[in-house]
Image (tube, rainbow, N blue to C red; front, side, top):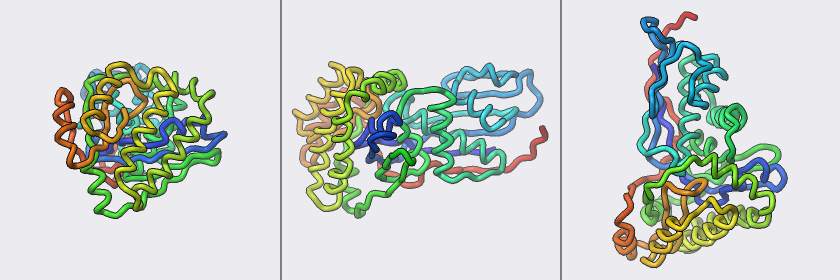
Length: 329
């Protein structure tokens, strides 16, 4: 039996520049972190006592004899990709899916990590990220960028840069005190809305063809934000979030809506310096930067939303339980 633990991510700056359609020509960069909310994948071989050969439990339960009939596209393609047979897999998570935290990519990374481990093979974080990108973007033909898979695999607070030659992951240089202050200045709120990010990503993918200048500016904010973290006023990080959110809203009409705009304006009026909707847009989690002396005011103003405490994490995907088993094909 194998159990993997894979973090969710929050992306601060540069979203959209991780689309291959953009960065293959212009390059791109994102600034993101993983945090202490996780998905867990439990995988083992299914004993041969049942009238089905594999079982997959997520928001539903699929029991099949033909792996080609599996309805979940990532599972169906992953078992084919790695030639997995007679599998029992279950998925659990600390936070709901389709909420802008890269949950599907964290699942893909965690599932691949579990499957490789079940075969007795250890893969690097880069290989897991690359395989998850291939699984989601090629085999499943889902629209979107590639930052989520990389963040989930590597973990930590990173600047990820993209080019025609691939990607690089560089840890953000930030002292512990500044990192603690940033963590305590961020407020994560659940809007209650959920959506299929691939639907919004498809619209964004079409829109970016005419938004090269906006995306170039969004990528430049990654480096401005790093400067703010490295010694400039930390509050500048919050103001940059506000500026970046306004830029992002101009990329595609599906990124925000009247409800999200109303909530954002309410938080800013109560004292938030800036914020953003995490992920592709349309719903999920709102993130705000709030100075300590104004936090109570913002929390009170946003009391209709669920507040989710969190802390940054650095580990990325991990195998947290490993019990090798014999398996005869």
